[in-house]
Image (cartoon, rainbow, N blue to C red; front, side, top):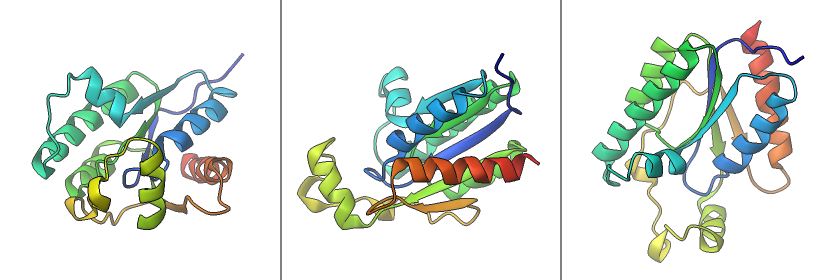
Length: 171
């Protein structure tokens, strides 16, 4: 029988096209091999579930991030390990997580702008005219793990690093 993991949060963040969803899905799959109480939320899916009520201006994105993390907190309070793959890179979000979720892991996926533009051109196509939105977000200072998610570093390598960090944090 699978065991229960300590209620906690793993927030996988990074700019659009950094590979957040890919890494999160692989992480959840790996965690579910051992634990039965793993929930995954993806920022794009949540935005759709909430009816695309929020726009894409910085204040809308920050408000939506508050909703995401409040939802995560509720699900964690019910005894679950929550993995969320969402940008939400605002100092206020980071502070809220660290102050309100005792066992939290913030993972930032770093990918050079050129690589993100290339990935985006094959998927979502949100970087119109080669314009990225990096300046819309804050630089996070309480990141527990930064992973270069490009080149020879695969999603599997990222998952292994996250699980190792989670095991250290859980002790």
